[in-house]
Image (cartoon, rainbow, N blue to C red; front, side, top):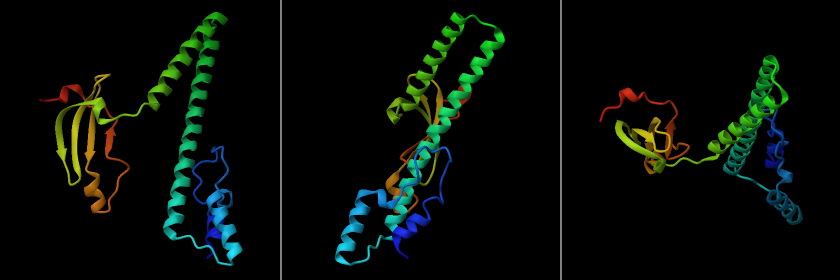
Length: 187
């Protein structure tokens, strides 16, 4: 099967969201594939793209679509919060100055939230408290976030061992976002 035809036939098979603002990726729009197709036409050869390359390109496309689908979902959530606040202010019968003040406070909170989402966490942002479990690829520790003092469970994985056993994960650190109960901490 011609790999370009394969890509065009399957381009819509894994669309994650109808809200993604970008059209599906077409192989002819990618410069390196278009250049390869032109050179194969001029030499009379048929362009063959390996199954591995197709799968890698498909994973990249899905990752990009997922990123923008999540961004659109977050935008919709922000809009819903704003509409809810506007409805609440209308029900309370606030003056225009009071409404404007609440809008400024809301915008500041949204900005802070977005800034915190962009912050990349590392192991250095946490203070280890106790090892609470060990497994084949690593360990689980009880940690405390340095800036907020919140307690979390952190899974630390040894990626080299996982790769040896062909069980890759999405990263070397995974954070459990459920706060641990401070009363359950024992030293």
